[in-house]
Image (tube, rainbow, N blue to C red):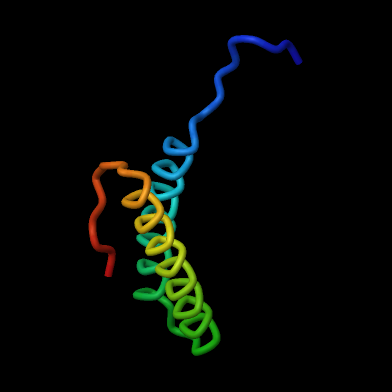
Length: 76
């Protein structure tokens, strides 16, 4: 790899991208939960949504501490 001008994301950009990724995953998990009919699947979606919500809260808190602004919205 060549040093110099590389397309590296800043820490803030990484946080904002992580927020968008978690938002998308939360939407998908909620859609899966809504259509799941088997108890095991319902349970797995509940755990997934809970974990993703905690990640989302963490990234939002981190972004705010860094002074970042973005299209932050409450998911859930």
